[in-house]
Image (cartoon, rainbow, N blue to C red; front, side, top):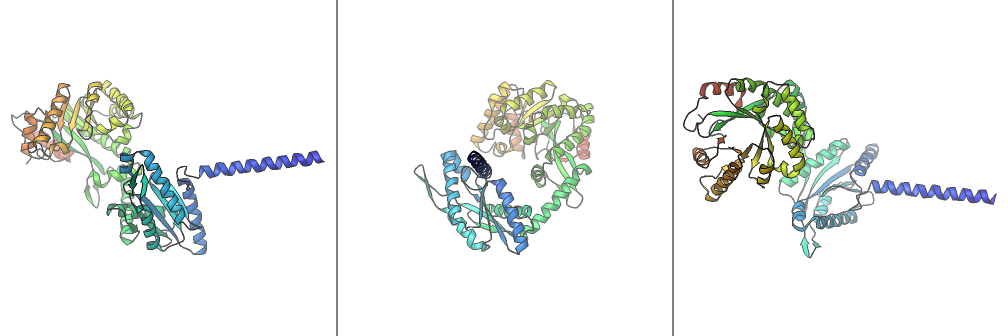
Amino acid sequence: MPQLSNRLSELAARVAELEAEREMTLRLAQTDSLTGLVNRGAFTSGLCERLEAARESGAQVGLFVIDLDRFKHLNDSLGHHAGDLLLAELGRRLREDAGPDDLIARLGGDEFALVTSDVDVAGRAERLLTALGQQQLIYGRAVAPGGSVGVAVFPHDAQDAADLQRFADMSLYRAKSDGGRRWSRFDAALREESERRRTLEDELRRAIPAGEIEPWFQPIIDSMTGRMVGVEVLARWRHPEKGLLAPGAFVPMAEELGLIRAIDEAVFEAACARTAPWVAEGLIESVACNVSPRDLLDPAFSRKLIGRLSRTALPATALTVEITETFLLQDLALSRRHIERLAAKGVNVALDDFGTGYSNLRALMHLPIQTVKLDRSLIDDVGRDSRVSKLVASLLHAARSLGVRIVAEGVENESQALFLRSAGCERMQGYFFARPMPADAMEALLRESNTPVPRLAVAS
């Protein structure tokens, strides 16, 4: 019997030990290692539990979403370790200010959240701003980046966790847009905006299969002859009620909703179908299509594009794919695979936004890039500002020496066009020549005007 008793005691001790290990593992899985606060996963489940309890008891629950205002600047100037120190200190301050039933979480980066039954919104928000604004000494430097707070309250503002989070985030965005270092509560104006956005989301999902997202075209002009030698494809949404919408009205939303790839594919296929006859008749030489950075991060992007192109009548040699200069810096190895695969099939590759941030001339030397597009921000002051003019001239000279074709976009007046032509820019596009237009108007303009002339063409 003593042996059995000892064995049972050992088993009980082992079970207790395993249970303690399980609880520790679970706690670690739910804890942010930097601040000791709960992480996003535990926060989401905790918020749902609190809302369910409040729904049964008739209580209110406030959600405060907190974000530092100049955290990126701190990371860039003092380093990521300094940023980690600040985040850890902020976690400590939030924990000290919390009530016994409050739930505090670090959602990621410099974003935190507080769930509380204390619905003195103004008082609590001001306390949070005070905590965010207190100075901390980091590497001998006093740091106080400040922050912004967005608030939504259950059940007054929202009936479930998803909407409560969305509305608090909208309030936070408004606080930051108003200059930061302030708080904002969800209200009727934001509710109207939310309803408009939700309606627009539903309409956008319907618009893609309905064919409402259509290609528009802007001509690319040969600088010496004035002839239209190509077109750039641009997306427009022909909304049945709101009329024609520019990309800024729907592309950011499409990226958030994961719809941008479907839009790109629909516009690409429609553009190829419409422009293939123009190329076959010799009205233009090339068709330029922009590529979403998200698509470029897909290792199979170039293969998929080649497959879609093969199902159209547009020759590969007539297609130009525009990729951004920043993507090259983001993933040079993946960029190289895409560019080389496209070039092997005869597709031209253009480096878009050239000259912004980093002019990656090394990429032009080592990658089969046939074209660079000077960013419109460089074109604004050419011919007026001597420093900008010298910079643009040097970029043109460097690209030309590497055998790369140069296209200037955003040309809006004659002085810009004349300067660019004299500096050796081969091709241009912009409002000075023509604004983007629908396919029928583009085809009519090509048939009417596309004959070589010894001067710059001027938009009517």
